[in-house]
Length: 168
Image (tube, rainbow, N blue to C red):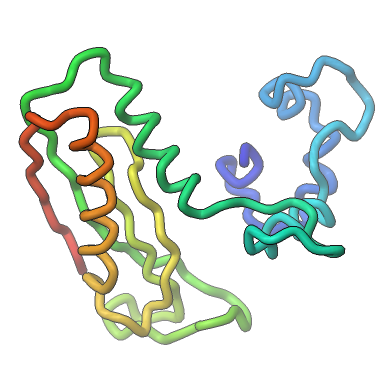
């Protein structure tokens, strides 16, 4: 995750990054000079994981749990429920170079790209969904907003929710 956050999106970069002492410190590792972090092959298994362990996909994730975690972290960051929150719903282009799955030319951005959907509340990311650019910018946003608002209302039932769209 730290490598991706630092802009190393390609998995082949992570074979060298796994030896980086600063990333090891970020990951809570104290030993030096040893490959302590995940490299390309392990990250590839994680990237291809579907939530069901198999012989080749031993690292899995549960998408619903990751989605819930983002909202839970937002809720836990506030000791008291605010009277109102503003959810910003936005899409942007993620330029593609090469032959990625679901590659599509988007006329507005004038290049091949994905069209990820983001939902923020202030500095907190509540949803980040990678989508092809062959769909409209609002596609799927209603389902994501309903999921997020429902989870927020379970704890903050009196908080007013305002939606702000910036769909291009």
